[in-house]
Image (tube, rainbow, N blue to C red; front, side, top):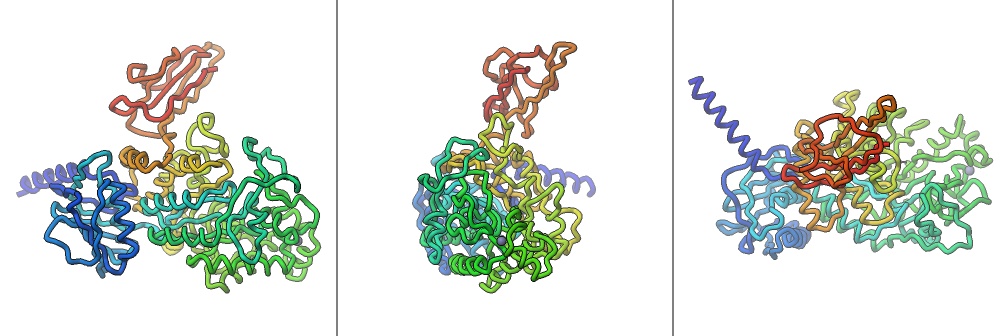
Length: 613
Ligand code: ACM
Ligand code: ZN
């Protein structure tokens, strides 16, 4: 009996391994995938059935995506009266075993059934199904399988900064479409900052007439740009009309993406102050929209009632426009130099027993919190809003790290918290060796570091951990002037963020994720997405030993399971070159060229070239 059982166990393991081998490459990894024998042939004879309740959203969306993925125009009908076979059914159920946003996908040889309790669940089941459709083929055989899945976190966010460089609404929609396909569900729209105000506000037309435009300093390093003069033409910028924004919100809604607007105050407000200078503490300064990194006098006066009236009116319009329950008010990096000198700010501090400008910031934030709450919204702020007396009822976006610990303090203080870690999720940072990447902050955030992020700090109790709503990757826009460069920064690192936010931690597997990426790249090529392959770049740190006149070289990549080949004679490396087996020595001044190769001998990514001197 024992023997039979162990044979059975071995057979089951063998089957599981086989199933694993056959499993399509998913990102993010679902909770459970069981492959079965056989396949479903997706063809023009396949009919799709969507719930009547969701017909108006699903019919066009699903038809468009299947056409994109297969080149076939499918019939998408509503209802559940399916034929005997060859159909895809979106089955809206009331099955308590399926979690919110969760789904079950069952592909068998005769039918495909996606079951969920919600629109979101059906939508995500469809995204998983799409990832089983082969690319670059005329015949679409989908492996039979059963997937059961639901997200780990409710907040699976992406932040786009359109202030530093304005991005068209078409491009923003394209990104939302991609985020949604990878099961991310929040798009945090950083709409205002020193370098441009991007949202039309009816009551204050100057915000977009003046605040959306700046003098052209293209080609000059971000942090070296001179301030603009009043006379200079202001030709760089743009803004979204309310109609544009409604269009983007509606587009996102169909994709289960909620848009959270950010109006960043009281700091980062130079574009606002340029439009309405009376909201500054000082009445003579450079009141032009910032052209780059330098933005003096960019804090709103916290001592003037007009500031609060102004923001009340702005936030009323913003709250009316965006259906999200959240309104992000920034609150980060406020330069308080003017507050220290401003008699009105100082008077408010005296009247309210505020001991320093940190407490004045807290006073300001609490007043804004009241305004936001009065509009039926929940305020989100960057973690600086915790300073002073905090902001009861707010949700914290915890970005600072190292000497700050808001990712721990905020949930411990009872605040719902979104982890937007500077160390793991700030994807404006460069993603390969800095001398081989476009200009960016001189910090390297490689793909694996985004992937390895654990959003629940171990210092939290189970109850505190529940306050961590999820994670968000932030693409700050200082160094991404073009749409293609922005995509280069977004992908594939935002897919790593998607897996961090969606998949259970025990499912994360760096080697599997890498394999999945390889399978997804042809889809990104098909969909004209400008992703980066920087994770394949070889890092080549070396040291010169002058005593022995030799260079000692160490080669490394963040990827596992690939081989590095290198040359020392100036030739381009191929798999006929030297295979890297460990640290080696050569003559100083040698030109090293190294690349990473897959098992078929294809070069992945770029070749690293270093003169060893
Ligand atoms: C931030 O990076 N200033 C939120
Ligand atoms: Zn002031």
